[in-house]
Picture (cartoon, rainbow, N blue to C red):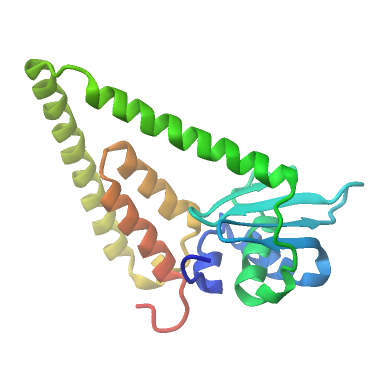
Amino acid sequence: MSETWTAERILALAPDASSAKSGRELANARKWQKLGHDERSAWGLCQGSGANPYQTQIDLSEPAFKCSCPSRKFPCKHGLGLFLLLAGTQGAFTENTRPAWVDEWLSKRTQKTEEKAKKREDAAAEPVDPAAAQKRQAAREKKVAGGLKEIELWLHDLVRQGLAAVQTRPYAFWESAAARMVDAQCPGVARLVREMGATASSGGGWD
């Protein structure tokens, strides 16, 4: 993996406590088949209640998750279990050639990224209307100011509730606040909020 992911950081991604618990239980190589990984991805098959094992995969560059299980949680327990297993027992991942279903998913993700980049390039190449550009800049500044005001109030609420309450917050709590900052065009603030969530779940001495 391109960066170090500890069990604490991975569990901070869990949408709730039950998913974290189930993910820990699935971080066992005996529960998986055809485990593999390369520089960008990890994958494995996990037998569930259905006839066919669930296809679970991770894009390690994000990280992003996909699983064929019916769970609506994100990431699901299988994604968490696979990630925990990779972080703790990388030797169990003996395959290094991606299956077709992993290649297809990653190709689609790469295509979407390239399409977004091309749209940005095309927009940058268009003739600039000074009045329109000024209007867009003013709208952006207003949006950013609103986002910063919102996060300020959110942080004040966290302080009032105390550090003990912060530690019990699920991944969705932090991700929701981060997503609002992305919408407010404050990606740097969104990154810091996500890091706060990971820190609060990083184990003893985090405070």
